[in-house]
Image 1 (cartoon, rainbow, N blue to C red):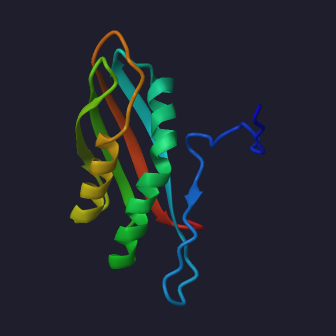
Image 2 (tube, helix red, strand yellow):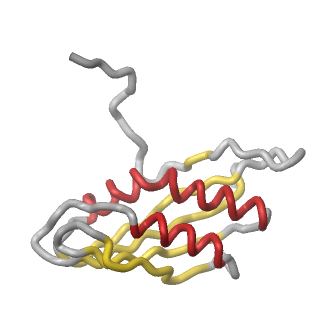
Length: 138
């Protein structure tokens, strides 16, 4: 029989994730948070939020890599996913964006999102989620 040491609470959907990344002497740490999930179709908003919450760390890795090349990379980016009834992501695109030109960041986040697996449902779902990118403390 196993035992765990975690609190069992997980992370709230809108909570900030600090990456612990330092660039040179710059003390700012980039952060990523997700807000505003929507789901139209077979999955509920709560089901979509759970998968995004599990995948937030990998999205943060994308941001960490991009901010190394573009230190002032901040803003909001909308991810739009088409999810089949089986739970597989059929397509992932970037919707509205305030980030500016950041093709590598977008590419990385889309590759990550396409690998996610959602619960099976009674029909296809279109899900959106806004990712907010900012230096820590802002």
